Image (cartoon, rainbow, N blue to C red; front, side):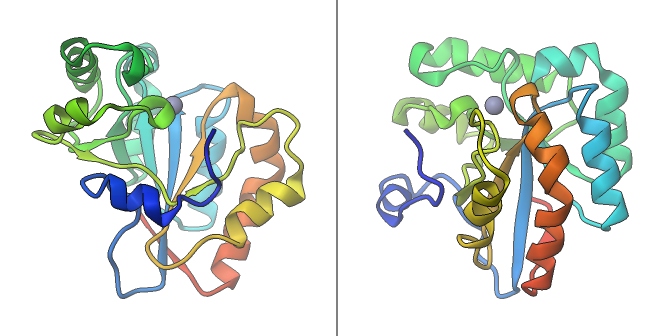
Length: 203
Ligand SMILES: [Zn+2]
């Protein structure tokens, strides 16, 4: 199971992964996993544009190949794109070779990037060693739990607003499971983060 806020112990156990960004500014880093999706990505992009926020989208190769126009749109709007493997591969069930192949295959259908986020956050130390040669491996500091079945709006909002700090990398999901709760809450959450005095940066 995952935590909403990544514990210090886990960050210390895996220091070569990026959990937070070192910064002197009061800023947070919004990220979306599992893009692109025709149902949700455009909606997210509109919200981000209206609030003048830049974010980072971790894209799955399979859907990027299917919806190159959405990938273009993400890029046109000035957001960052990261690699999220070709078929949303779970590292715990993959050999290192096939894991690397998945990442390379994804990289052939998305714009050039040095950012990689492991699907499900699951990656073995020996896979980390290989992936690190070419990519910065981006984990997270705050997991919204937007993908959790029947999560309530106030819980989702508290997960984020009670746990962010300067440099926090926050994860939302651009997928079917999160669509309903995000459409209800994303705009409000971003506004409340801003009200707390944070600015937004992309990775
Ligand atoms: Zn994912």
